[in-house]
Image 1 (spheres, rainbow, N blue to C red):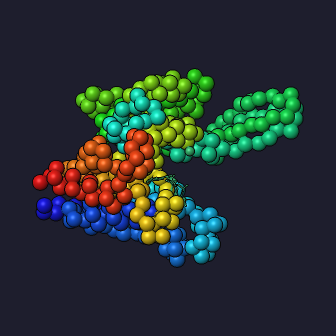
Image 2 (spheres, rainbow, N blue to C red):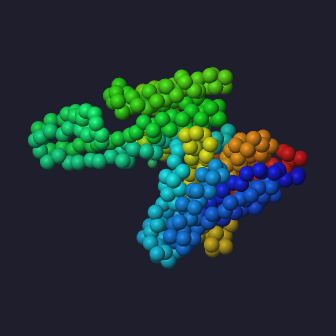
Image 3 (cartoon, rainbow, N blue to C red):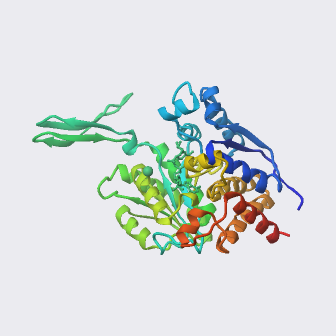
Length: 403
Ligand code: NAP
Ligand code: MG
């Protein structure tokens, strides 16, 4: 096969431990032999983050903003134990939120579904993509304990001219608690844009769940932003793909999701998204099959990654010279999804086709019974391949499919 030319570079963020080992194998075995690609490399190895005093996170985010496509390997989020283990100057802030916050956008968590891998919720035949609005709500909230009898009010004091506002929240007869949360039109509208752009590109309907009957203004902002954006900019394009956007009550939507066969984007407010992304991940079964993608509101910048961590326990075995059976699929899809979007943004369908063909080879391999231990155990099998054998099978399948 002759190599396919990729016009614009992809930003590669390398990581730690077993995830790093697999990341390198995937690149050497399944990416570089087939693509003529310029990778702008940043090493998030914990010692390198320490040596650069975490500046590498900011440099990498700037590169992603410039080239618009990044793929990230899992990296350690250091705690005090890691500081000792790696001899660090300090427990640097998370490599994930650091990069994400600088790029902005919405995180889409997406499972990879194989016909022969049983799910905890067997009715889920297609992915449910959870989109979490990672701004404001409970996470930016201010809470307070109330010592006794009295009143809590909500006040708005305008910075310039204009009327102030005041609402009574509750009149306490005894001790209790109170909570203040906020959001902004800009952020909610950006979230709506990301969700619509993602659904359109993926060909999935988009469902937003809120409780706007209870929170007319707060949840109303979510509902109204999505409604308005859909009507003014997306309805026609959605309908031409046979999909739609719908708002539902969040509790109805939760019941619908469990009974559904999947195949939609579930747009969640921040707290809902925290819970539901873990619920959906558990329902689909394996951490090794969950990917994440950050997409900016304009739909023009993406950062892909596996949702699992650095798989430390397996790395210890690898360090001891043993072959492990760690699942590389989510890491492989971090590569292929980045390459897919690179092709989309560059207008090079042959690059997109390569990404899809490599994903197809992975589907064919697993669905013909060749897989790593985590998946084999789910199917009840008692034999499995090592990571390296599995990657070799994908490579052979890819070459056989495309010869
Ligand atoms: P983890 O690396 O996801 O691993 C937890 C366990 O899940 C593993 O021990 C393994 O179970 C199973 N597992 C996860 N991924 C697997 C795969 N690809 N194939 C097979 N089994 C897999 O989570 P952790 O141990 O809590 O975290 C380890 C390090 O990763 C931490 O330092 C954390 O900061 C970092 N982390 C990074 C990210 C990120 O960069 N996005 C996300 C989460 C965690 P068995 O041991 O039973 O085989
Ligand atoms: Mg969570």
